[in-house]
Amino acid sequence: MNTLSANEAKTQFGDMLLKVQRAPVQINKNGKPVAVVVSMVEYENIEALKLQFLQSRVTQAKKDIKAGNTTDGGSFFDALEESLLD
Image (cartoon, rainbow, N blue to C red):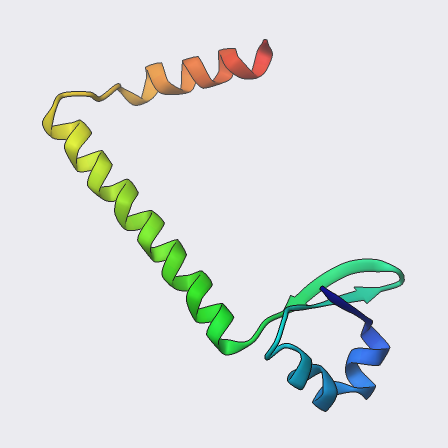
């Protein structure tokens, strides 16, 4: 992945736009990564994957509910709290 400082991204904005058409570009500020710039196509692919993942989770949740594979909220949070304390 290409990396630019925030100042380079600002002064070379047009060049950066060309670079992101090939691969994401990481932007660093004070030597630390703060952002990644991606092409619109890449962004749309990421959003589509997120939607697909959420839809699969909803489908699974509906199957679980139909099969009676559920738990009450109190039990869920008690188990979660226990696992965090271990």
